[in-house]
Length: 172
Image 1 (cartoon, rainbow, N blue to C red):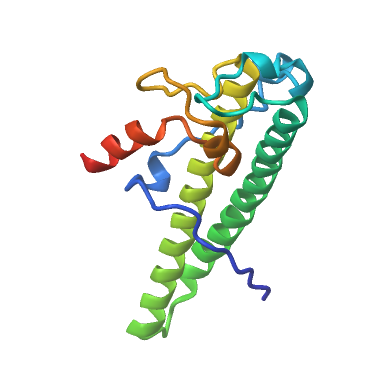
Image 2: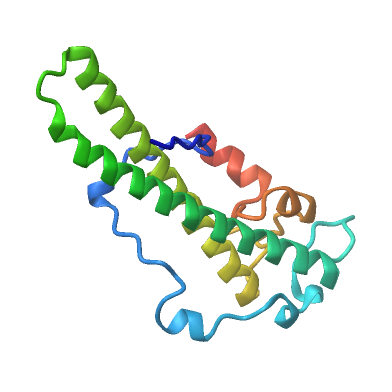
């Protein structure tokens, strides 16, 4: 049996896998209208006062990073779903298992569910950031409309809020 190691990339949102219906954004009309980094005008992306404007190379780098994240997360989701399928199949073979064995199987299932949900959340965020980049909304705070900040977006391209709005959100 091959075991893969995954690391947790974000906290769970309390949603269960049964309530999640993930549909890849690569399907349907969205895939036919997908733009590229070259179609984004860097001069139209907002920056904070004192920051240099975006360059085409920086936009291409962020675009590629988001595309890499999407590919990686889709692979993680596939692996987690395969592991879950195996765990669910093996859970019925518990004749003779003691309480520790049953508990270990439950923990493994819960862990895989959590990893799959986290990967789905990150995938949704990455796809949303790509859509914002390709749609010209990238770099504007969704709450106040002010620029998020070029440095913040280069460090965390999935950011949708400026630092002050994010701080307000976390205080709630």
